[in-house]
Length: 192
Image (cartoon, rainbow, N blue to C red):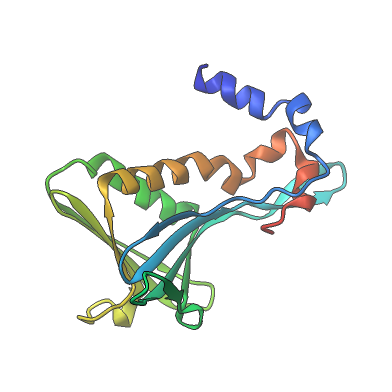
């Protein structure tokens, strides 16, 4: 089935009418390494009804969560939720991230994406690409040069490309374009 036909089916009134009373819960894309759990979840745009139309109240974003892991001898692990770091990227920053997709197969490349948070903190997303792996590091601006930044994770090329494809696919939802077909779903979204 062609991609356009899939989208037309997914956004068709008949398809969405069946599930319109149920909340939509988007599952995170998660990668584990020896000392960190990295997850990425799209958070949809929120809508508001004005007169005879719907408007985007707040655009969506991609939520990144990094949680340190304590490995135990029995093979179990414990997530240190109190040390969890959360970062979000809006559509502008996501565009900068998607540019790296074209270079994912290059031998080596380095990217630095900086952005301001709502509380005016400067954040830095670093992507260092080697021949086999991609190292992703997210930190506050003043933490970026620290040698022991615990919030770094290495992704293989398949994980990195999967993450970028999921981000790319999420863009219409982040911009609220899914409301073109079913604005009534916005009130039932469990992620809002």
